[in-house]
Amino acid sequence: MTAPIVTLNLIGPNEDLIIQPPKTGVALQGKIQVPGDKSISHRSLMLGSLAQGETTIAGLLIGEDPQSTAACFRAMGVNITKLNSEEVKVNGLGLGALQEPTDILDCGNSGTTMRLMLGILASHKDRLFSVTGDHSLRSRPMSRVINPLKQMGAQIWGRKNHTLAPLAVQGTQLQPIHYHSPIASAQVKSCILLAGLMAEGETTVTEPALSRDHSERMLAAFGATVKTDPQTHSVTVVGPAQLSGQSIIIPGDISSAAFWLVAGAIIPDSDLIVENVGINPTRTGVLEVLEQMGADIEFLNQRIVTGEPVADLRVKSSRLHGCEFGGDVIPRLIDEIPILAVAAAFAEGKTVIKDAAELRVKESDRLAVMASELSRMGANITEHPDGLEIIGSTPLKGAEVDSYTDHRIAMSLAIAALNAQGKTTIHRAQAAAISYPSFTPTLEGLLIEG
Image (cartoon, rainbow, N blue to C red):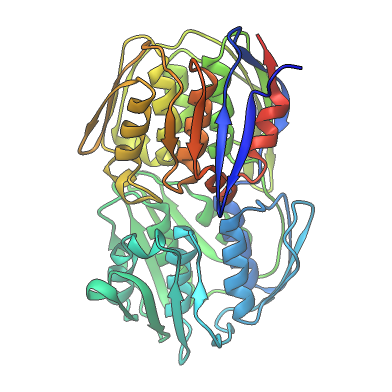
């Protein structure tokens, strides 16, 4: 009996993922569906909680981050049924009706939960909230949302001059502002728009580039008055708003699909279809870069599902070549840069990634971690202050690497290991469950020996 290509090794609270492709290599064949979009999952739970009436959600991501969002809103009196991908029901309390929790709100590892929720909590008058997260989240900067919220009149206190969690929030009546964000960030934009729902008048956010627009789409669907100006990268919400419960179908997360798209492109003889993937144009930077690198990706069955564009994506193995990307495309692929670094390691020539300093304040310092861990596998990769430079076509070899408890790092290294020579052990690989609980069994189900 041949040895398994993928094995798990449980060590105390941690989990090692061991990948050892056979000498004949592997290929990926078949059809899969990826978990529901994480960004839309968070927002559907939050807006469903703030709306009047029942919201039903199909396709919700059953990962640790949405679980954290649901737990926080349950602690504030919202009735949310058990999370599952078939249907979740949220019985909203209406804007301004969240209850003061009896305990600290724990956001776990989810920066989206904490940053978006701060805008909601700050606008709930006469209620006191305490918010924290795990070790990683407590080290991530919150000033990028706290500063504009304070311009609206919010009262927020925290560590390191009110920039780090744990945080205390005294809800108050907020005032509308026009905020010119120094960074293109959907989390910053969404936080301010959510805070503006109960402010009297127009709250506007202008960004230097277009960030993902799930909040604008969903706010409008729930009944808020939303104005957008694509030319100036501005969006406005008019308060006070009234939100009504909706029926939501969440497409597959393109950030999760990206791992399979890169795997299918770099692993010889692969032919893979990823079904029901959200292709919102504010999220498709990864597809544009892969196309620029020469990936063979075909759009099938394009359609609109609950206001979001969706397609099935077919990827076949191809010869990739290096490219350079940065600037306005970065906000549209910020979460996919780790797996694009893997693609670059197998591409011919040089790939340069610029303007991505934002990756240093994610779940890990993703620039530093991808540089160090791919280097352990033999990649020719150089870390720069705002990006990476990768000389491709250097054969990778198996090694001991670490996810640094970052879900996207864990999965990116697993894809790299499939195309490496020898055994790779990924320490703390259980981090993948944050956004993709079924990643390992899906991987096992797609593999065939070359």
